[in-house]
Image (cartoon, rainbow, N blue to C red; front, side, top):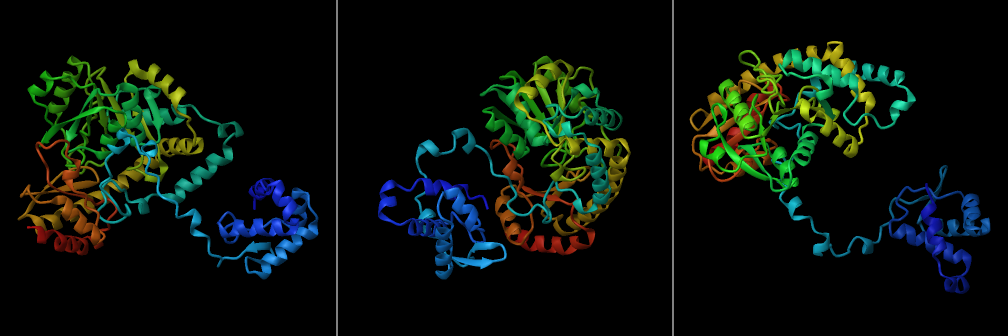
Length: 489
């Protein structure tokens, strides 16, 4: 145990107490008070009597007396580890019964109070939590062996802070993969490694816009993005979504132009629609005319179930004003906490400089291991396995939902990604209440209306993620879900 706190407590004893109370009694009272108030918690091992006596500058017999007295009173017990605080000692509640802080000086800022609660309140591994990959099917043993090899070869100086934009070998691996699989037009210098999509969004919001600047988002739209933009003080305007994705009207463009437009074109979050090629090109050209930046969140584009993969918006037009965001949380496992941005060439220098001033990058071994995982083909092999698995689970879920709910709801977004949406025909249903009822039965099906921005073009229904749900469990789960949904109709 680190007994520096005991030494400090001893030094704070007043000279008046020194004259009035013996050293033995003062030491005994000090240790007992520390136990009763929880400073010395149950199971704490006190210093050996010889060591404590030397540190306090008192006789060893004085410490021995104090320890023996506390053992006899039941505060301590002797063991092979020495004198240990008993586990059955009740900690005084005097430190825990303090009145809660209510002063406005300690309240959250108005900006922080605008952060929306996440639509999930239970374990993300519960069916049907959206956006959760099948972590059980990740090749953990292969990853562990590769990570062990990286650590064995890692020089000591790599334990220091790394490049703020990420390890170059990983940036090279990512840029090569994106060029061949997603049609992204980039070189390694345009790639900036982040801690995930949320980190990328926060960085973009603070680096590329000022407080009160206007940003367009899909409505309904990703709550994580809403929170990133709200925390940066940006003004959010929801733009309706239809069958072809984001659908801005002419009147939207005639008003104040947005500084940033945030879209999820490969699999709109949360509805699941895929933005058509015509809509993508039109948005890029309009953004060029109005000097806007587009943030393309390509969060689960690797899982296209019906038809060939659609190319990224970033690569459709040369010098497109698009910042491309990606993550390995969906394709590999969330705990990896590695994402990336691909920024336009004219922003490479300023954003790299800002990252160097603002970010302290680490986890070099994880980045090097990921680079090797991509370069040696393990990443693509894993993606191919997951595509087959997720397509099978998607097919099973779609069949069950159509059989069970076709009279009250329609399915959206089943052609790609890791989740789909069940949209109620009756848009007056309280989908938040439906979601809460399902959650009480252990089912996570977030309400679509929670993602609406503004009151217009309201969507009502539920999101269902299927990537982590085994096929054999789905019939029983859908039967349980039906029992929770039907009473609302």
